Amino acid sequence: MWSNPRFRNWVAVARACHLVQQELARQLKPLDLKTPHLDIMVNLVRHPGMSQQDLANKLFVGRSNMTMLLPQMEKRGLVERRPDPEDKRALRLFLTEEGRALAEKAIAVQSAIVDDIMSLSTPEECEQVGDSMRRIVGHLVDRHSGDADLTEAAQ
Amino acid sequence: MWSNPRFRNWVAVARACHLVQQELARQLKPLDLKTPHLDIMVNLVRHPGMSQQDLANKLFVGRSNMTMLLPQMEKRGLVERRPDPEDKRALRLFLTEEGRALAEKAIAVQSAIVDDIMSLSTPEECEQVGDSMRRIVGHLVDRHSGDADLTEAAQ
DNA sequence: ACTATTCTGTTCAAGATTGAACATAAGAGG
DNA sequence: CCTCTTATGTTCAATCTTGAACAGAATAGT
Image (cartoon, rainbow over all chains, first blue to last red; front, side, top):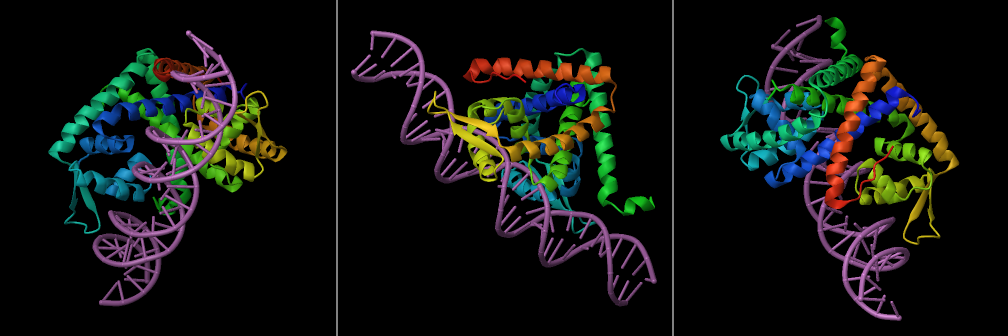
């Protein structure tokens, strides 16, 4: 099992991920942010107007998770949840001015860490790591969208 | 920021990790195991007699986490915690017969997933991903061992 | 139009994880 | 021998995360 290269190498991926996440959490503490909050803000910077469901899908977490986190951030004045006039079920999400400012700082922190760790590999290696990982993501997303979604067969 | 290759590629790593973890959790459910339990058992298979602190260090989690998980597994008859005669503070950890049997099944599940996702890359790419990740782990462990000197991470 | 299904966000209880504060045991230095 | 410091494991309260069950809005099929 430890002689299996695939296993051994994947374990390294998991360990690296875990450590980077921890380091990020540590450095985010002065901003009073947790990594889930940062993930949300990063997505809202790129895609303002997302619904909570959109966000949950992108982050691969449950919808209830968003229901727990977003009201906190709203009370803190970081995000705004506007009811959608076109679809009375959905809430459209936007960063406030303050949210954008904080997001900028937090993203700088994250970028510094990522730059630090990825600079240990050459740009070619870095790109190749990304390619391998994107293949994995695509593979697993495919497999699971087929599992539960029956309407997918109709398309 | 999304034009930064390092950032973009690291995001892929994090997403892949998250998804694989989820898939593992799903497939572990029939065995009534959570991924933290598997992590513990994997380590105890390789290194019987570890202390709870050793385990926490290897897994990069807090010691209190072990205090929460191990008594559960002990009650379930999967692990045994023997007081160390040489050091009355420490508890030496061992898998029971039942624990070893269950660990074998669970490791098979994990190996199947890892094999599946890593087979999307060539053996050379796979090895190279592992190398990049091990560099990251080493880098972060070094940086932090200066802070609070605890981590003696080996594999 | 009508019913059934799907999709939105919410609530709630259960479990995981953490960090701080604690108690006890071991080790260092006087 | 006696402190002072460090290490081990525990407790506890706070927070994150999830899945199931829910209510209301939209959609599809008839």
